[in-house]
Image 1 (cartoon, rainbow, N blue to C red):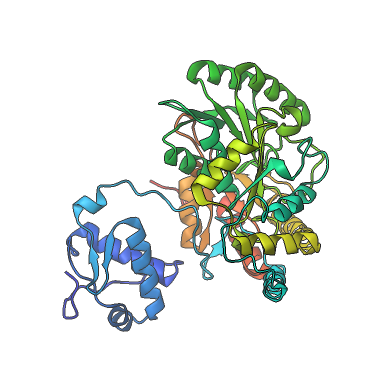
Image 2: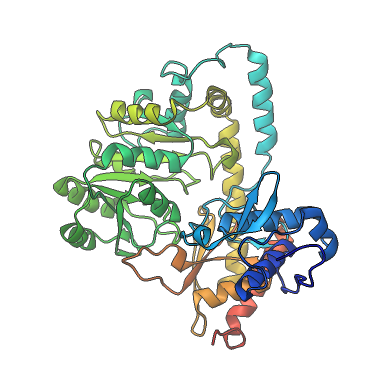
Length: 466
């Protein structure tokens, strides 16, 4: 048990780790060794901070991390305790959103770069406060969110998703929320099945878990989902929905061609599969039509402003299949009644004034610059990249495994995302990592981290796992 007079003392010797991570690991080690038993009370934050020689904020972050993992339990008015077996018995579901650690070169999570959009959002809020439109009291309605839906029609642009007007658009709290709404509208029966790429963004698994659906991966090649593999997977497992990231596939950067899309759309029409195209990782305009333009009665198009303008807005949109927007709207209203009216008005202001488009242009330019720097440093390896995609897909050379490379990077203060985090249960993970290029704060930190990774790749024998 940890008490102020105990001889147990955590050690923060974790080379290359942030202090809060090293402290968290020391507590994990204490729990694992039995030095910290179930029910033991940890010292107050300030007391442990003084004893270890760190800031109270460092201790608070370590406690919070371990509480999220289920290893600690915080009880209001009593303190923080080591969790009992009953609490640890439950599987821990990794969070989709993580706080960015400024002490770590962050290549793990893909986030929009800071190009000054925070100030533009502040200005929009000021204008909103001065508008006195007096509609920030009651629930949003199809009448009060019409301006935002009309703005999104302009934002998407002509031709991308086929025939489109504001009535076809349903708004949500980010793309992930819109994907879940579309799945709720389409899935049915006791054992619903979602088909998707064999490597899929973890949010797909989270959504399937929430809806108690089975998710099955479909084999891919350099042009996206393989039509023959889709047909075989459907014959074997069935399926009601094909959820796909065809424009920018995470993690591989793959873009599905128009010709391949037409093949897949023909199969979906034959099998009665609804296609949900998740476009959340796209930041740049494209000439390739969405599935909704190819198969308008069976396809959704979903995206957000998260990767191109600001993740703080939590604003997403779904273009429903022709004739099915009312059903999707009903699901949204049943879930949360509607996107908050102040958010609707801020987004409308940003889009209609052109501020959102200007931010997007700067994000595109910043992303392209970061990608070029990444290719210059790591281009000697098996690297897949596009200038309009905010991450690189690095296939590791012989001698490295994704897990050991990620661990070696962590020891050097660099976080990366191994391929096994994207692999579905019925698919194997390639020996690769995804490197987000826009989250690492400063360019010098970014370049230094790329240099470290390049050296690691060239010397796998030093870091091999036994």
